[in-house]
Length: 320
Image (cartoon, rainbow, N blue to C red; front, side, top):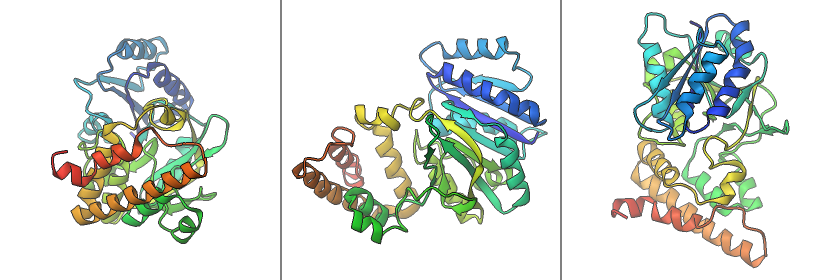
């Protein structure tokens, strides 16, 4: 097996089937590609729909479906698809983590395999991510730091320019280049990286798990790359309901704050986590007051500042 594609479904059976349909010609064009779909105990009829879709389209020769016993989150769902293949007698050379709310553009697998074959020190690589309107979405990033949290909270042009090398969402590259981390919506990983650093950290329910994984890989000497010659269309936020337009309609979920805190604590320790929390909370508070005084429309989730403080490292350490 050359490539294993892993898709985690949760209440998005129609999107998952559409994603598999977009993969069908890629599988036909690239012998040795297999797909595994896991389901995180969806409370709807996802299991029945996906199983029926695989059977009706005769995808069973290359697609395996694994209903899971509980909803352990994004990392758990991926790990349950990855682990059996790594332990098999024919492990894949590359593993592609792919969101269910994506459509694969032709040639994506060949472009990524060619790049990774030619660059043996590249451990992780992300494709270009395209919005449904054909605009390019940010999918290559810098690591989160205390300085990046200061910039993200304040959102002031002159400060952002001064801290341009710390801004997490870096400008979209127009060429293949090394980056800190790539979106878990479409992330190729060399088998040896998993063997070297382990699977995804299941302490994260959702969000920050791919950032953490790329950082752990970096510390083991593996580089991460953005490869725009391969592309997928991302129907942003359809699978999670947190990003994209859905993000503006509801409060940010608790697991986002828990994942952020875990990322900083695990990788930077309590003092840096405290500093990052103080930076973001104070600068976001100032920014919010200024925007209100300037009659600028609100673009953040409701009660974001309060929820952030409530889930900060200080509140967590005091048992909230």
